[in-house]
Image (cartoon, rainbow, N blue to C red; front, top):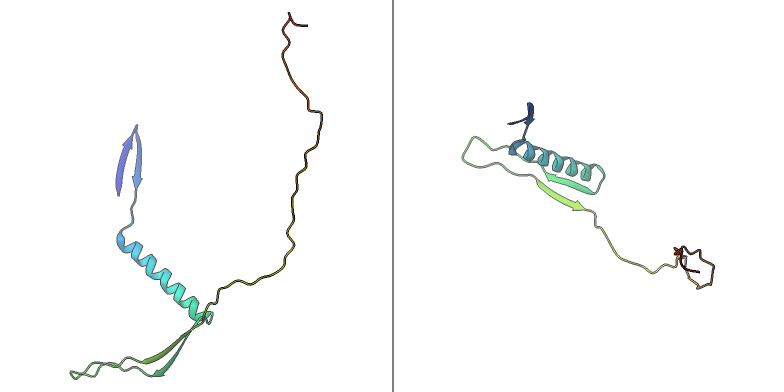
Length: 106
């Protein structure tokens, strides 16, 4: 927090730490991943259950997961649409003029 004094006015500026910024980014990523699974864009089939490590020296076992994602196809196609055409023509019209006349001129 910084404290600035200028003509009897005190301005206090609060700054966020790096931890707050990282937490916001992690929450945003978690929300995006959750939305992708909820909308069906991503799906996961768990084929084998995971297991916690035994009390022995051996490690645990991760579950076998078959991850499928939708494919986004982008391209172009020819389609006829109505497009307005703007044309200009030259015409002669009377335009008002403004001038200054000197007292000595006729």
